[in-house]
Length: 90
Figure 1 (spheres, one colour):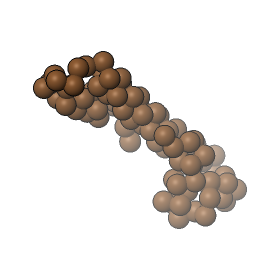
Figure 2 (cartoon, one colour; figure 1 turned 30 degrees about the horizontal axis):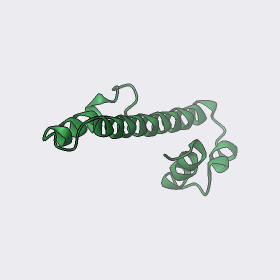
Figure 3 (cartoon, helix red, strand yellow; figure 1 turned 90 degrees about the horizontal axis):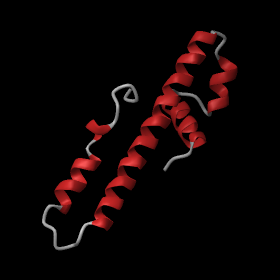
């Protein structure tokens, strides 16, 4: 799973900044900075949700016998991103 710092740095580069701290120091409007914080928070929450779904799918797989033909279907149902709350999505 990506760390919060990794996500902040990646977000900064995707928005044409060299690094996250540049966003904080180059923008004077507090509302605009808040928007960047909100977007990064959602990206981090989304990353955490995806990791949680993946861990759940792995745990499900380990509990099910290998001979069970439904195992891949259940795994895909757990990993389906529709399980992530809409409030977390960008």
